[in-house]
Length: 105
Image (cartoon, rainbow, N blue to C red; front, side, top):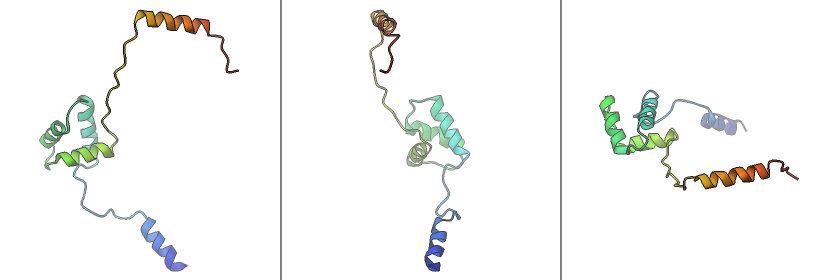
């Protein structure tokens, strides 16, 4: 029993992170986020070039792409929807006024 709990403690305890340090550190992530938010349509190559101008360490596009995924910035395709016309607005308003006393029952 004692050997098992010792192994679990060693595996689950927060210790020193192994492996190489991250190329884009905690200060670089907000910088990358600001670059993306300033130009949302920028490609990874353009973001990599801008980051390489600001950083002392040369970054690859793979590092930039992985960092974007890690901080939650993923690409999304815009769904095109037809614009509402004045006829649509009038019909919506008429429906809303006609059914404004609806209940859940």
